[in-house]
Length: 302
Ligand code: DON
Image (tube, rainbow, N blue to C red; front, side):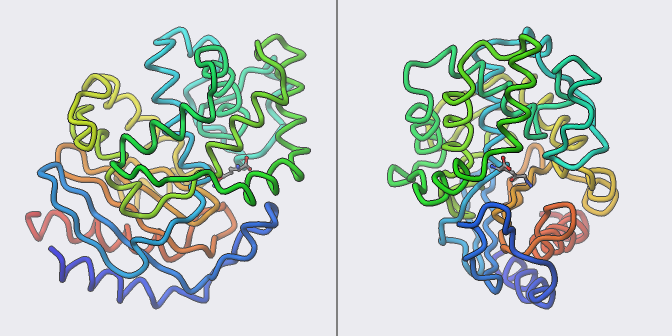
């Protein structure tokens, strides 16, 4: 398995040089596009890594999986009164559907949806950013995970589009808390700096029927795991969810920091990271690594 992951890394490196590092959050524009890391965390507790697997990067929209999981734990099925469950067919930061649909976002993995989900968490916890950081630390077993203040400040400074979505939803009565507090919590979670290893281990509960190995306990029920994986399959790669499902066929979530986490239910999680993105906001080399991984998964019998 280790040499296989190294081989995937070597082959995915051929895609470096394609795509562009995200620049709409200026702090992300400084990332090195030549980086590529891969980490696999199996349900049996083994870890396989290649390349820049230990380098922390901005998890960005991968945070939406953590936010959704926590909101489903605290609010259960009532969450779906606030946010829908279907692909939007629009870019992740689009506002186009929001007014026509009375401030109810299409799904929890577009920005407007994640902002509504974050509002639920602001209602549930006394210090939401601290709580999210703590959950990320406990799920990954890495107590040194930090919120990158530079990324957080950059997102705050360039928040106009997310703020517009939040105010529109507030006007429709779909946000209970103040826009600034909700946005600050949302950006804090997106600005968590985690490595491929941290993310593969932290989200392994999605492959393990809800059991979080680093915590040594069941984090969510098997049924909830199945539902979150379903939403990752349909909405996790934004506008390219259909293409990705065809090429890779695994539940996955990407972020504009260049990371993608994919789940092999019952077996393992894999996180690949490389900062340069395609036009949909998904990492070019990380997607290719996942495609190679998925193609060879069954024949290798791993
Ligand atoms: O709200 C934003 O724009 C970012 N914090 C997260 C966007 C993101 O990662 C979308 N991903 N592909």
